[in-house]
Image: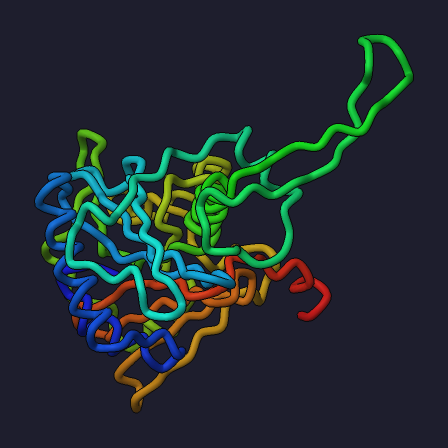
Length: 285
């Protein structure tokens, strides 16, 4: 959700229980405004909150003028007892970009986040004593929680970050910009999964044939649609407030909520959850 419309966005997403106390809303709004100014981002999004046992991680992302360029991710810890609140934007810490090595390394970590970025998870794995030998020894590998945080945010971004069709426009020269003429989806379009795209570089679109791409508008349909997501049925789409609000919820990553008010520019997504993927979903559908 865009930091500039944070208060309205939190109100629209409140039906899923993603609320914040007034003091935390005020603190976030002030600090995110400072983050945008000091880091010189084109836009700052309040990404959401990952719930830890001792403290929660509040996540924000900075976007450049090219909306599909790699996003910069920042976080701040907020203790369960209410400590950690500050109006100083320096409280936000910049996370490194995710790498394939990070994703593999953290895939063995299970369970809840602790809430301490310096916490070390321990994982025991077997490694060969000498190359060519069949003798293995147990080695304890330590994984920082901050590394796991980077990995989980990257996975959620790639799997369930959502944007409505038409909100972004691709220029003939390549960069993707916010579409200033976007006035929202119509009520009938807002009820279809095909009207929503993954907010990332396309993956499936590149595999489509020219015949399948024939009806697509290259300036608008340049991202992957949610309607082809696997497993089928991994999204819940509901109309709320008397058809005045459409809400999408991910069943694959519980806690991800996307909202859009049809015929307006109000849209966004927020994640509030434990950072755990629902691996049982294929067996539940």
